[in-house]
Image (cartoon, rainbow, N blue to C red; front, side):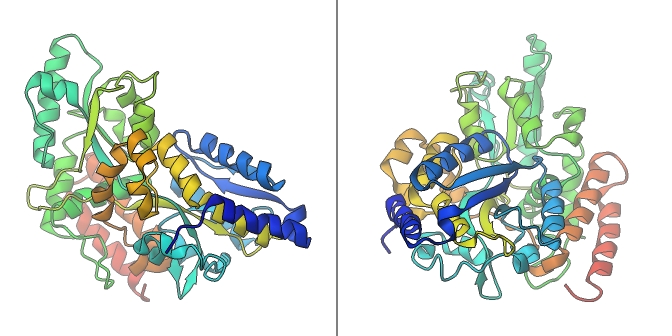
Length: 423
C-alpha cells in the first residue's frame, strides 16, 4: 500500500476547517510521559501541526515512571475526564484501557497497513483498534568500544561474559585512576522497567515469559532462578549499589558522563549519547542483549508508545487527525533522525535519509523483530498486578532478601491467587 504523506493527512484537517466541523474550533490536549528529549520533540511536532491547522495543542506532562503514568491515566479515564483528548500509551496498556478509547479502525483504515502488523495487532482489542503506533522500542546493550579495544575484549555474547568483562575493564580502569567507573548500568528500581529488564534475563536463559501466551504461570523454574541469582551479584560489584533505584535516565546519566563500560537502555539514549555534550560521543556502539548461561536467545523486551483518543474528548474529530499526524511517515521519519526512536513503518528502515543520518536504525531492526513481549495479552486487566508481583520478587532477590528460588516460589503462589478467578 502506498504510504500516505503528511500533506494528505493535513488535507483532511483543512477539509474539516472548510466544512465547519468541530476541528475548526478545537483546542486539544495530549498527555505524555517522557525520557530524554521526548517532550521537546513532541512540542516541535505539535507546533508544526498548529501552524498548518490553527488547532492549538497543549501538553500535559507526566512523570518518567510508566507505573506512575498508568495509575494517573486510569484515574482520569475512570472519572471520564473530558480535559484530555489524546493519551500517549505504553504498548502493554491496550487490554487494560481499551474501553475508554475511540475505535480507530475506520478512521485509520487508509494507513493502518503501512505499520508493522504485529504492532497493530498489539493495539487491537476485541476487533477495535484503540491506539495508532507512534514509535516502537527494543533495548540493546551499549558498550564502550574504545575501552573494549583498549583492554582486548569483544562485545559479550552471554550474561556471564558481560559480568566477567565488565569487572575486568572496571578494575583495570580504576587501577589507572578512573575511580568512578562502573562495569554495567541498567534499570533496577522497583517499577515496570525492572519487569522488562528481568524478563529479558529470564527469557534469554530459557526461563519463559513469566506467564505464557496460553495463561500458564511459568516463572518458577530453575533457569529463571539461575539468571536472577546471577543478576543479584551485580549491585556493588559491577554496578553501583544505587542501581537498585535506577530508571532509564539515571542509567544514562552515569553512562553519558563516561562512568560505565556497559549500559542496557532503549534507542532514545543513542542520539543523546552522540550529542556534543556527551563524554562518550563516537566512543561506543550497540549489540544485542546477551544470552543466559542455559539459554540461546537474545531477548530484548518489546516496548513502544502509541496514541489513543479518549472516548470522553469533546473534540474527537480533531484529536483523531492529530493522532494520524503524529503517527505519519514524515513525523516518524523526523523522530527517527532526531532522537533514534524506532519507526513503526517498515518503509522507514529503507529510507535513505534515515539511514544516512542514523545508520544504527538499520542495526536495530533485527533486535526489534525478535523482541519478547511482556505477558499483558494473557493476563489482560490483571497485568499491572502481575508485573508488580514480579518486579517485587526480583527486587527482593537483587537486594539480598532471599534467593531467587525462594522468591520465585512465593511469586508463583501470588500469581496463582491473582488467577484464581481466571485472567
